[in-house]
Length: 243
Image 1 (cartoon, helix red, strand yellow):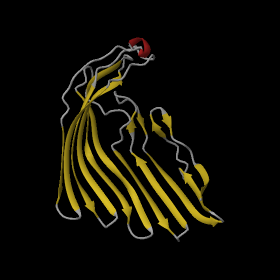
Image 2 (cartoon, one colour):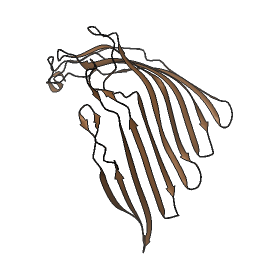
Image 3 (tube, one colour):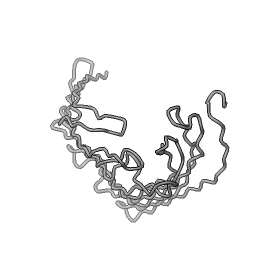
Image 4 (cartoon, one colour):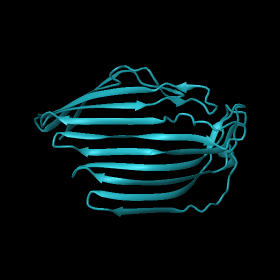
């Protein structure tokens, strides 16, 4: 196994408790809480680092969450949650060593909603506001973890103009993100807009649907992550058939 993977074996035991509670206040509101610990395999260091082909120790994490599920209507559900997540942090340090050092903490609030507002309009989306920190690092002060925006949200809507014609649109926003742990560079905030439509056609024994859309309608130039450029304006068409 060591020959095949190029990495040494790691053997470690851990007790992983998990507990969840759900309480219904009434037909529309339910409260819940959960706590869980997790253990996952550590990352193997890559060949581009100063310590290639090494197996980092297992990664421990713990998550605590409390929240409420609210039925705004028969088909529109909203979930509001507070969360606190801690996880061992892996990163490439300033000496180009891939290491497990410090603890990554995420504390924040999350809102999710999905469902039909009425017979014509359907909404789905959500977002989070987060305070993310890497703490207890060996050789540097606390920092903001890479590629974690403080604020991120999306909203999409689908509207039925008729039984056969639907239009849809959405907006996605991400605040600025750090590129690296020393927090020397950042990725700018960005917002993208998508639009689309679908039209149903009955043709002989086939039910056809013509689907068209434009992603990144405003042709926003942005970095999706420190190593990934966002897609430019993209126009798509599809013809779907059922019989």
